[in-house]
Length: 128
Ligand code: THU
Image (cartoon, rainbow, N blue to C red; front, side, top):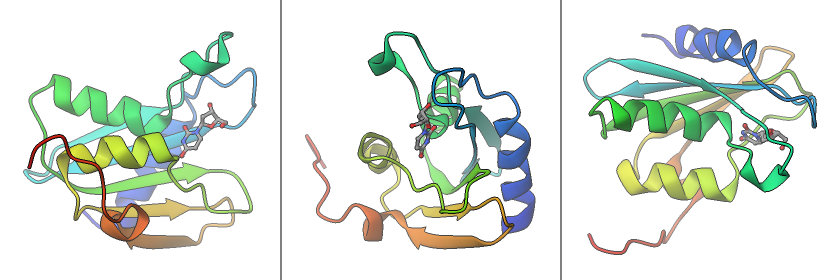
C-alpha cells in the first residue's frame, strides 16, 4: 500500500470522529507487518480526560485482534498544521514498534514522515 492510500484511509476514518467538544476530527490508519490495516478516530468524552486519540483507537483495535507489529501509521486532521501524535500515543506506539513510520497529513494535502524513534527517542521500557 502506498503512503497516499494509507493516508486516504485515515481521511475516511476522520469522518467518524466523535469530537463534539474540540470539533477537531482526527483519523488514523495503522498498517501491520502482515499488511492488515486498522483505522481509528478520536472518541471524546464529557469527562475530557477520558478522551481517546485516533491513533490509540487504531492500535487498540489491532492489538485486540492479535496484531502487535506495526510498520506505519497515517494520521489526518483537516488543519493547517500537521497533526502530530501526542506524548501518550507516542509511548503506546513505542510499546510495539519503535522503528515504525509516522505519517501526518494536513488539510492542504501535504504530509510529513518520521520514524517513531525520532519523535520519541530514549523511550521508557519496563522490559526489553
Ligand atoms: N487528537 C487525536 O486524536 N490525535 C492526535 O494526534 C492529537 C489529538 C484528538 C484528541 C482530542 O479529541 C482532539 O484531538 C483535540 O485534542
